[in-house]
Length: 253
Image (cartoon, rainbow, N blue to C red; front, side, top):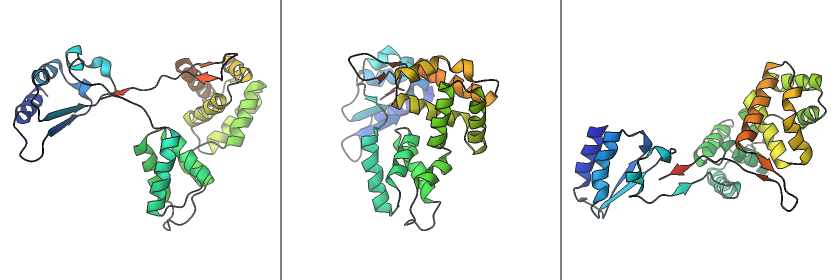
């Protein structure tokens, strides 16, 4: 690794044969060794005008302060639905993909704000039909991505509220038998609570452990939900709308 950085440093010093700049992109820069960082630091201290370095990382805390003090830092976040929706609609129009609006919204949710993941899902769904003009429905998207049916999620949420252990077991078994994983069920329950963070739902979170019974999948679902809200607590005040305080992953270049 050190030798690679030294080789890069030597080549970077040479002026470009075409164009004005040489651009070097180093991904996961936090993985460099101490000696590699030291080798890189030498060119960052007095960089030639023709060099542009772009460093990408999800762990900025692992980068030496001597490097951070010599770069501009930009924080990137996942794309909002308001950005993703028109982007994917434009892709569908250009590619002749016919998809329901609600189905596209569900796809965006499952993509988690990632353009790459959302496009990958769209490509997967479009390949389900040889004829691209065939309508891709919300039900098809749910089935293909293993998204639990909302009616069952609402029934499960009600069962937790009523502390109906037998109903919880029955609904979880039904969801599992339909091919849903505990992680997907937990995500759907979290979404239902976040979208309607009433005092009743918040108190429900506090008593989940008491009503999950001895069913292993139900216990895992509860553990995932509680772990989520430990990292992203919901707060309600008398003067403002409910808010979710989430810990977003950080990307710095």
